[in-house]
Image (tube, rainbow over all chains, first blue to last red; front, side):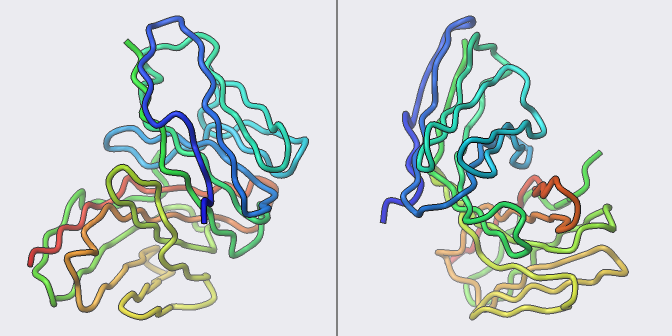
Length: 115
Length: 114
């Protein structure tokens, strides 16, 4: 029962470095998401992919890019990391975006620190 | 503008007693509400949900109440157990339109003391 798998679990970057956060789900879900969680804040949507081949901006997309590689995989890229991107990043998936009773299934998160 | 508010950052209760976590929302278009539970170093997991056509939904020890006129929902846990200690997020969405955005509150840390 892997569910949603994120790698890496921890990462420290220097300002200006780039990196890609990987996410894969094995539930045959159509929709995938990237959220960030900051202290004292709720989860905020960065980007989402309603279905394979499509991606759209969420609430806080600046400084990020995404790739929906196939139905299983959805990656998040930081081209030039900034201290403001220090956060915990969660990948999630759902069977069908927009369904009334849609439920998200989350990965265990990536703790990213940008120095 | 925070559309989903969880005004209590933390709550502490004794094992066996009732835990009541509260959530207020400002957007009257929201018509579906969810609660997620999050343990440290893990992702949030779905707990229970309620549609705006209902005012109560129950699942074992967990019950969610919705008061649409007050734009308020609450999660009741009875009886509370130490394993319930976690951060609880309230979330809301509007099923119409094309955005399908799920809006989360900031979370409430529940501590259940043995």
